[in-house]
Image (tube, rainbow, N blue to C red):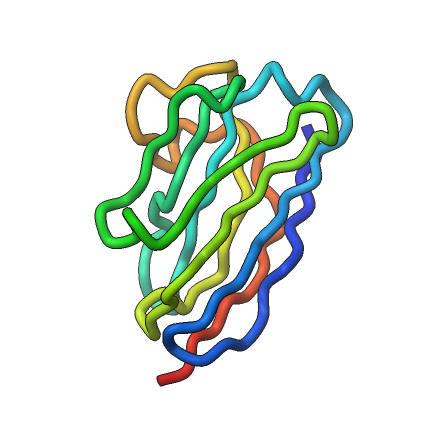
Length: 125
């Protein structure tokens, strides 16, 4: 499955951004999806994930209550609504697809089957 992110940008602390991921090439509903991020000098880390139906979601502790992941299988899209952004949220954000319909736990990069190219999110203080 091919993935393309959009919606990144520069925002002040406390602001909001909405990231989108458009999927193509294979049946979108066959894949659990997620978001990861990578800050300069750091390893890529999990942010949020959602199973194929949207019935189960997972969040990294620092974003719980601020970020919301969702998907629309009819439109082959996934979104990440990010509110109350903090400077430490600054990173390149990557859309990710699992190898099947379910994450059995919050995924790691090793669990990912396909990656998007990434979109930069910068939060100024």
